Length: 296
Ligand code: SF4
Ligand code: SF4
Image (cartoon, rainbow, N blue to C red; front, side, top):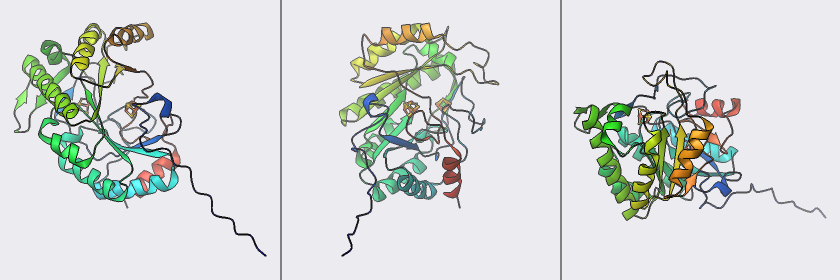
């Protein structure tokens, strides 16, 4: 008599876990970022999306771009290879809502094929208010809004320009005012719809560092769930490329001031726009091969 042995089924993580919003989940829940959103409606003085290098790990960097259909096929492959996959996110390399048709189509396709995975987007907030109902209807459960200041004058120093939906370009204080107003509208609308919201704040010495507690106070008033301070990564060739990154002490002080108001995320890995796997895992050769295979 032969004994049949059932094939091993891969262990899947509980699909309510998001490794960025819940530190306890980071060792067991994987995420994949789909690089379907190349354009941006804002130009931050620290960002250079043209730079593309698989050795570099930071937002705005991706080895390639995918169409929505390619991205959905890519999720199929990732899910086959990484049973711990729990979250599918779009975080660039530009802004998801400056590429809103691609973003929504991608997430619709992923939801049809994998209705149990969490969906997540990360945005500067400018284009979010016009799509709050789309976000809710798609079941996007986690949204990150990058809000680095509540002072429009400071915003005018961070953003070289801000371009609204009708193509009008804003600069200086006007740019800071518009983006802040949209960020507030975004967070209110997301919280009204029961969505989990994280605020990312970029710590720029001499520019945003001293205003972190004000951002945290506003985030708390708006009901934000968690806040993540990200140290400036000075990128050569950008207006902030010559600035110093904040010291570990400055980052710790900013987090401690913000913690008075909002729960802090302290395990952010500054992931690439095509990051895949557990937080902290670099994209290896296998990940790059899979990404390019999705394009064929
Ligand atoms: Fe870069 Fe994001 Fe700023 Fe756009 S909003 S310029 S993608 S950092
Ligand atoms: Fe999470 Fe930070 Fe990576 Fe975004 S950049 S996926 S918040 S760890």
